[in-house]
Amino acid sequence: VVFVPLPEHNGAMSIHVILLSGGSGKRLWPLSNEIRSKQFLSLLPDGQGGRESMLQRTLRLLSAEFPGCRPVIATGESQYEQVRSQAGPSVRIVSEPARRDTFGAIALASLFLRDQCQAADDDVVAVLPIDAYAEQHYYAAVRRMCDAVGTGAAELLLMGIVPSHPSPRFGYMMLGKPLEGCTEVTGFVEKPSVERARQLIDEGASWNGGVFAFRLGHILQTVCNVIGKYDHAGLLQAYHALERISFDYAVVEK
Image (tube, rainbow, N blue to C red; front, side):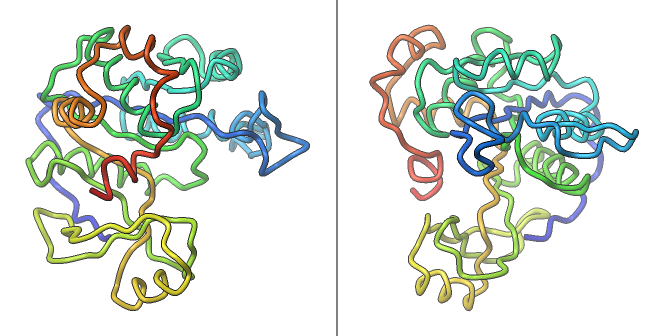
């Protein structure tokens, strides 16, 4: 999806960033494992002759687009100390008592923003994975997504990626007309078969990049519609009973 740059906002809009830090550490095993997942491994050059982790790189590039923002990192209890040691004291951490996929993590972090950080319903929230290996333009696109939410372009903004092959591992967005500096999404299919993915690509579909932007009040109402009304403390207590489901299946595909 091509995002048209929007004018800089006047400073009145508050933006919050939720970073999702999960994973079971299988992709780089044995370097990574259940406790020390790939986002914590200091494998990447930091531009100053040293090495940094995906987590540290994401925070560094993110700060250039959102100066002064204190991200909220949603992670499992087993990874809390790793996140704290690498992210530093300025980052806020939401510790999930169980793995309940991205819908549960986003719901818990959004309630944390409202109840613990006094965020307002009109505040804009961006959600992205902490382990994306991307350049600065990726984070600039996240900023433009937030700006588009702030101007009222849509209630939910997604990041689209041009597919390179018909993979069954991603969600696919069917695209419509240009809309307020973005592109309208007319349909969404999560993890189709290879044949269906090939058909979607032929029709001009994009991959879902797993990056979302919305107003806090909108997503809290959506959470209420899906699982009922909770505050942050209440959802923590009920977390083990939540269905394990992705944000894509629970919200976007619908």
